[in-house]
Length: 302
Image (cartoon, rainbow, N blue to C red; front, side, top):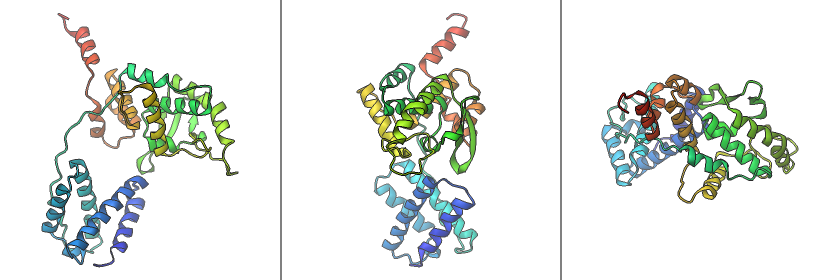
């Protein structure tokens, strides 16, 4: 088979430089493509020019046989469409084998979110007399209070925070920056953590070049998205034996609560950093409490 690494590296550079994709997206694309390259080797397909519509359909059949979820198959299909479109643009192939392949229809699942009672349990868990407890509380307040992504949260530096205006400069997907406001609860939790807990954690850092990142791990280095998940899992475990959430659940909760209280959809889109309004519209479901309040307020026979 031809040297796939040349095409792969060229495509990844294209995603990074021209499309400005995040490093996480590029990692997933690389894994999906390497899986397809393994399929080409198994089928003795020597060149990308030998991949036709039939091979594309066969590959998708294999994915179904491996019991991949429809969402995973849709992502892999989208990746391969982009890759072969790139090869076509670079004149390395003469036909696009995945152009006519249909993407599996995805179930429209409502995002999972938390009710106020469930949130309060999470906020009551951390020991605010300890450095890690202060960090965890600030982390929790910020994720719920701003709706930012975990990756965005981990990249925040001290200089990104403006306490006077109550805003944070957030770098999102594609390195696009936006200002996100935060409220009094997040303000107080961040102030306590920065003035006390963070300074204590910094003293544990062995490297003399102290990090400017806002959130630190127990060694004093910048916390990772995986570290945030570990922290949140521990908080949830101590708060409730029945509650199961991910860091993204706090983002879902942020958007759902805003919209249920009457926030404009386009404002929520801006706060979340969504490129299109359709991504935000998934949050326009309403809670039973909101339905009841609306009914009682507007129906003449309520």
